[in-house]
Length: 162
Image 1 (cartoon, rainbow, N blue to C red):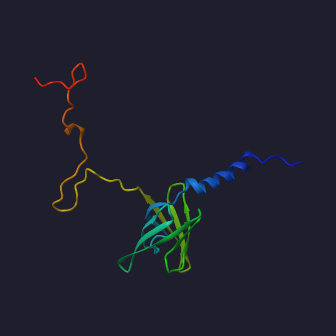
Image 2: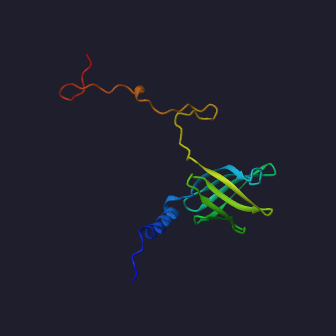
Image 3: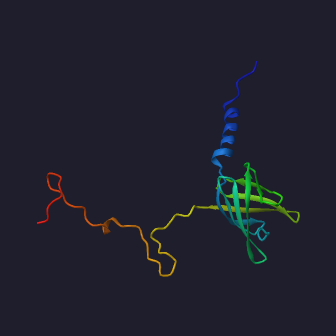
């Protein structure tokens, strides 16, 4: 006679599936936090992964900043990036519970791990002055700067000045 699976056997696979599809979104702007082992070469400075599976990356090579863009594919444990006209490159990648993205690859028979942190999306600053010389300063309106609301009489009509 077959018994019903335990609650754990039923819920753990559903939880893991949900984490892989909903809770662990990898899209965002990522910047380098650390490299393990320290000093290993991983010149990536910024990685932008958008929800439409497009990526752009910035890195420094021979003292010059370079970049690439293309498509990416994320399956929860690998990040595969494909640039037009080039072979795709696959990194071991996982999103930790601490919110950090850990990408691994092999370099000179050594495993290297890059730890990236997600940068918050930039918030437009209306209070910040424009950086263009001679541009007018813009700022968020202050309710105290607005003219006072017209006063009304008991009938709800605008009051006449005295």
